[in-house]
Amino acid sequence: MRRSLVIGNWKMHGTRASNRELITGILAGLDANKNCDAVVCVPFTAIPELSDAVSGTSLALGSQNVANADQGAYTGEISASMLAEYGCGYAIVGHSERRQLYGETNQLVAARYEHAIKGDITPVLCIGETDEQREQGKTFDVIVEQLSAVIDHSDIESLSKAVIAYEPVWAIGTGKTATPNQAQEVHAFIRKQIAARDSALAETVQILYGGSVKPDNAADLFGKDDIDGGLIGGASLQAESFLGIINAA
Ligand code: PEP
Image (cartoon, rainbow, N blue to C red; front, side):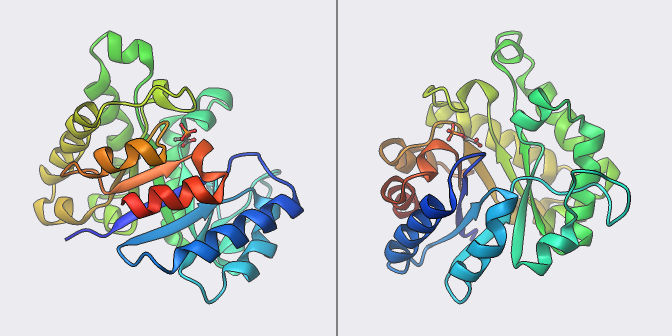
């Protein structure tokens, strides 16, 4: 039985004051729910303060990226060991915004994923097709390519220390959610790809859906067999909607 997991991605939002307010609101409503683990992936600068705020609570902290090296001349990067020092347990890797706006390739994503695992951080590997790729019938090819890049670079066993997020690019921040059946079809495909290499592992890997999840569509999505929770952007920026999604999981 896989536990549910809901991860908020705050992206580049918030001030110190608004972060404090948001985390206080989330923590105030969190304890009532024991069926679902919850994580917030916050901007790097918010990590030290929020690390103190979540200490001793059931809310875990994550970053929105992680370096593809442990230390050295990598201007602008933050390593897994730096994140771990501040109590970060998760790091998003390969978010479509990183792939599209900053040119992150499958190879770079695979190296970031590898270094997260080496540094005891759980990578949240984002994979998913664009609108155009879906229309061209390439959804499954894209999934295979993005997933294989990571498995070939690390190994299949590494997935026991990772989380996968299926995020169709056309559904991110657009209000256009994949239908539960559309999402389930891809989630089942991802699990089948893993099962082809390790069937026991495939049953345990958490596969989250991301793309315009809101409190009113979360239950239908999370009710599908292979959807183990969600990666939430916009709706994670308000305690009430984030908690609503956690409660649906
Ligand atoms: C995301 O950024 O990963 C995401 C799913 O965003 P949203 O929920 O706003 O679509």
